[in-house]
Picture 1 (tube, rainbow over the protein chains, first blue to last red):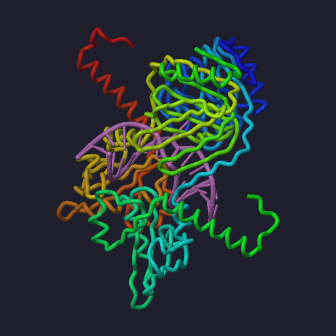
Picture 2: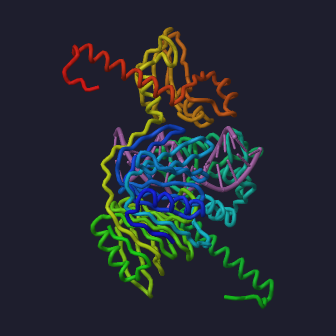
Picture 3: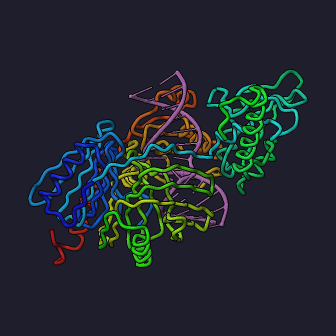
Length: 263
Length: 263
DNA sequence: GCCTGGATATCGTGC
DNA sequence: GCACGATGTCCAGGC
């Protein structure tokens, strides 16, 4: 690990180059101007910023506030450094789409370079996918007797989240949203309906599954005879956990207390 | 500015507390586990990460790769720190929506705290707004004789980007996209058409303005008799620049070479 | 490579 | 506070 406080620009450039060569992560606190050119363009005048360069070729430039970086470059950039007119110039070029980030530094308060040992797996309990899995695992979450026929079913304009048959033989079309369902979600579901037909003498039942309905859409939902079934991420997660437990139990019974049991 | 290399957890906590109190920015390289709970939840086991805490109450946790932080918290969080079971625990709580980020640190390689002096204004040359401004300033970009009547015009499901009358008295409805226009953009425009009518005996002319059309939408566009007019951000920007120059010239003529002229 | 849809999206704006 | 749209969105997954 390298830590330099108020390094000269030449010294900083040397360490920067060595670190990038070695695919290390670099952080700098520096006074700089930045220009970006590519899909569009941006400029920002002189100021002190936190600059992060990662080994995979991405860049983040952060100001004193805000979650978002003021300038950045996604992974896959090629870095160049040079000294020009007494300033350290760091350029990050992304090949496709062609984009260039240019950082011109006239003073560095601080530079560090290091390698992060991090093999851990990131687990996100979330998302529509979780809700979908829960419904597939336990269709009763929507209603008793529902049988799932398909999911991510292709229809003309996109994909139906879940597609099934209810206990009366009606066709059920489910659109899942993890956030309160707004007008866009309803429109999407309505769109799909045009391309789907129920069995002979049966109905087509469009259902929105979401934690709640956004305010303005209730009239539309009623008008279009769309059903709403509340389901939260929390509930989906619990369902899957329970299901996993019972699966494990079944497995254990199946294997008859196998010797590899660890917990 | 504070820079600590391999500080003890107690020492680190003190500096961290002082820095956060003073609304400074803090960066740490630390071995930690992280859990998040809120709109959804996440967990990640032990590993070394770059942690950034800003004075406005936002948090970023970065791994060795990727533009995106693995965990984060937007602005407006309240920070807590404590030592527990020989670990430094940093908690960032966002009041609304209620979300909690929990970082448990067992070793710190490096901690810095600093204040960034940065008054510069960020200038972005971009966005649909730029294209819209260009069209408003010079409707001929779309076609000769177009007169703009309104923009951001409210219709039932949203807002029409630009609304005008062509040289034949037909109603023109423009949807602007800065990226290649895909199915969603076309759908949006079609939706608006339902709520608009042309003058007696005139036509309704829906026009997509974008740098290009996405591949799959050409059939839809032709079927719906939507026109496509190519316009890039680049061209919009040039138009506005030119317009600005001629405005300045006109202003100069108007003022009769005013004494405040500087450039 | 293009295109589609999700995201702990974030962020601004208008109501 | 809620809803809606833009973002240099980024990113994974299909084709």
